[in-house]
Length: 192
Ligand code: SF4
Image (cartoon, rainbow, N blue to C red; front, side, top):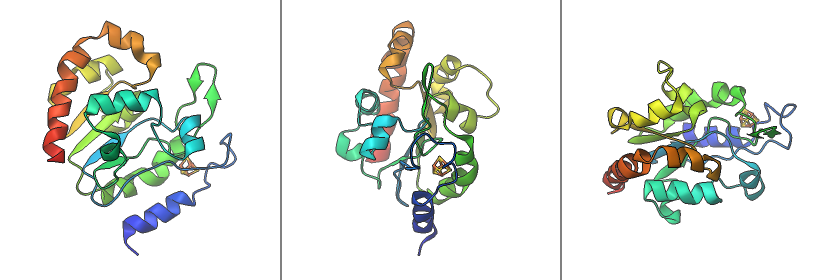
């Protein structure tokens, strides 16, 4: 069995955080050895947990719009890997979902990312993913996203596409005006 298939099996069977998680472990990841785009989000929400599929909601619609990908492209693992910082639904806190469980990245990230050899663009969504991928950069989310031209062509940093971020989007119109079109151009290059 290929390493990546062994990893898929082991991730699917993972129960490492069973005692901490509010529901049964259900890793929500999508990848293949050929994936060219890598989306790194936070952790699946309750809807993704129930449907066993990520981004089947308003956040997913907005993210697909930003990326310029249709649903078929977005859910095609040979094009798009979706590997969040935590693979299982972490539960709810007082102000939204809890952060991804740190054990998950420690357990799986290094070995899995090593197997995604054809990724040309990593799309880093939200501050947890930014802290992992840009550990030297202690700027806040807005500053990191604003620096998009220095991150491309290999990376781009995005705010979470949740409707909860509508105020951020209103305050930062440069994001959809300048960053999103450049991101879409880069994705077109990768897809073609
Ligand atoms: S969050 Fe990650 S490490 Fe924890 S049970 Fe799920 S797959 Fe395993």
